Length: 128
Image 1 (cartoon, rainbow, N blue to C red):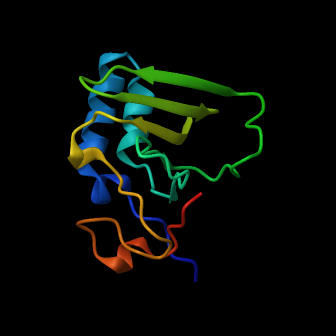
Image 2 (cartoon, helix red, strand yellow):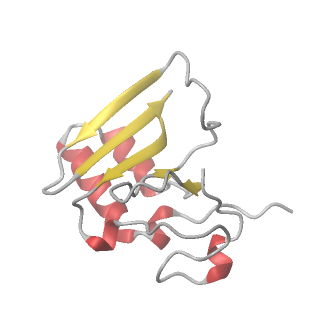
């Protein structure tokens, strides 16, 4: 039986709270509801110091999204938050330098846990 990816709200509650708040402020009520139930499929894995992005959908990295893609650019107090939304589903959360450290996903070697979460929660979470 395949284990489900952890909920972002359980691993990164401050990021989820910020996403929900900003989406509601932007009038993106449907996406705000979706943001509450996002799963952390994988961290970006690009290795850039400023990147704290996460994959939340099943889209295969390196392939085009195709029709139905839209980008949602949010304005946090610090840093940047951009969402790739495909047919109403948040597939990718781009988190750039600046959000509170509680929102940051640390870069880590494959198979290691996210800070503050038990290792079993992250089983199956792989860098993109």
